[in-house]
Length: 287
Image (cartoon, rainbow, N blue to C red; front, side):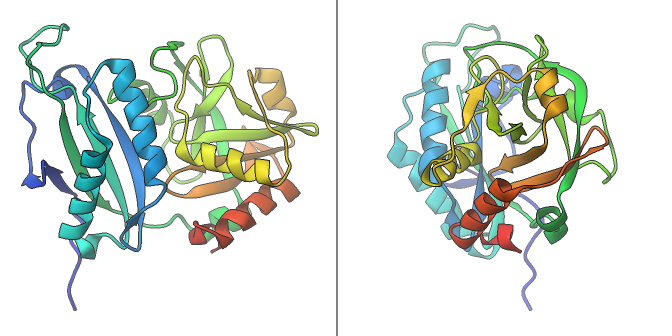
């Protein structure tokens, strides 16, 4: 029986790589972007939306242009070269600003570089979908920076600091607020919650990442005829919420059954969205 390697595999320009040029601005300044894409049965899930968000980020940071066709080609090439790794995996698509001399100003000669990393992955336990997960609010605050809000830059220090706030398996995720005290997102997820009958998801125009699965859930809720308010969510709304769920491109959607030690109960809307997605493109949700 052939054993699939658990080591990540990296490609650049279609070739195997194991290092990055120390002059690359990604290493020096976090000058670049990335997408984390779910690979299921050899296919990149929601790839069009990932490429679209990556291009939005490239325009914001002034990187590129990097043709869409090239991004699709490098993803397909990685999956083609590593079929044994591509049944249930995570693909990281990285675009950097390229190499340049030291200094914040980019050289006019800098050319963007594209890297693809293919990582083995495992589904989260079925109990998370069935029984829900515990979350709590964290002390680490997210800076309010509209120029970077919504995109996934390579600088993830806020998330690193936030993730250091807990260890162990009793907590599934930590929720982060911005410097004004508004609920924004989890360290690796987006948030939906009910304040009475009102279904809310945070406004991400100042901070946070506009998640691909968040977009999919918003689209699904629209087809269900369910209105969602994209709004500022203060501490009071979080304290009052009666139902919450999290979204992420890798695991899809999970219900929250404990917030800061307070029990919550998944309702009809949460279960209906999970059922619709599980019956369509996200079979692990129905596990």
